[in-house]
Image 1: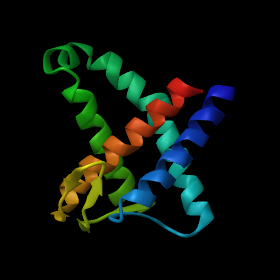
Image 2: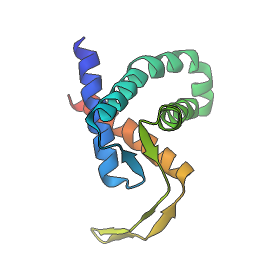
Image 3: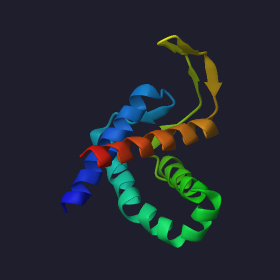
Image 4: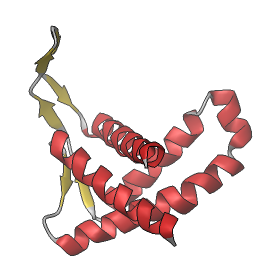
Length: 132
């Protein structure tokens, strides 16, 4: 039970942090919708992702993890388009300059934003799992 609750909190934090930096990843302002989205992401990362890693183990080994990435993308796509809990749209990144490095302004399409959002949510959840 403790692990499920932690995964729910990690999912909630990951969704919120992703919505802060990615302006094309929109969470609805209603708290119940946010909690439903966090519950769905927690369920995905607690049940579906581990099962898919076991089932797709030979393919993951051959493709160096590409199959798991595609499963995560597909599940986030379902969450955004079928259940309407979050919106993933195209957006224009304004650019950033940090420590002498600059990333210029660029337009990110909806498909690439889905990839960025999935990567962001996955990385944040995995980092929180490793830290706590």
